[in-house]
Image (cartoon, rainbow, N blue to C red; front, side, top):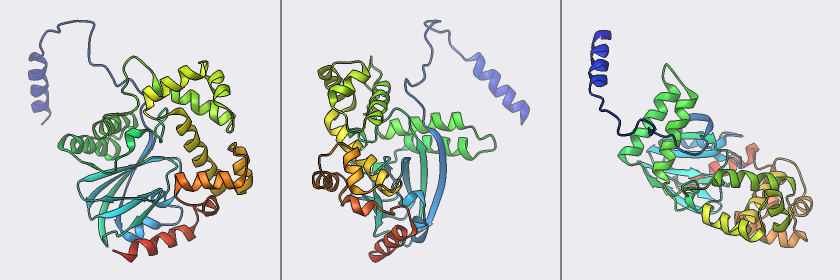
Length: 299
């Protein structure tokens, strides 16, 4: 076997053509790789709702759900998305998700990861499930091998995951040529975190751009208005403050820059589909038990 591999390798090397340009090679993708990649499977309805399980929790990781067998509906912020075999759904961070009408037996692959420099609120992720094409299936297989194989390699797995994501979502916010949107997003995220209720003028000053330039560049590179991004980001962060940090609704409203609880509650319900008070204890067993009953109702 070793000799065959050596012969094959020599044959491939001998067949290499001369480069047209000795200074232009194969370039890597100009964006930050996903990190902290984890793969696991779910086979039964009950598996989807283990207490504190990432499959049914409001959390800060990206989740790619791949339906191998069995179907079900994943509800993101009150919007239902039917997932069937051969399709995938990307759940961005800080998006409420629950399950309905799930087949009793299923095989779903979960790929969870961190993705620095990417905003969960981009229009690129909207539109529901994507079909797993032949090319995407091969990239998924390469990711699985790099993660699970005898020579597991996080760097290689991350590269395959990025290639898979770009094949599923070709119009990501990092496609704009000649710019560095991931750097812009990171700067905006840092500025917004430092002053959650601050004005756009103050944020632009932190980023080092004029307000008008920052607005125009953000819309061009990310696909949504900066005002909408900041509103949604603050509300989703407020959900974390209430659900995980133990803040009162009044405290979260004030920290997010809202003048009163009522204005905050209306905006919160409009974006997340339920009142801020519902975030309390969201990660606990009670939420999982509630979702299990909901999923089993139509299964």
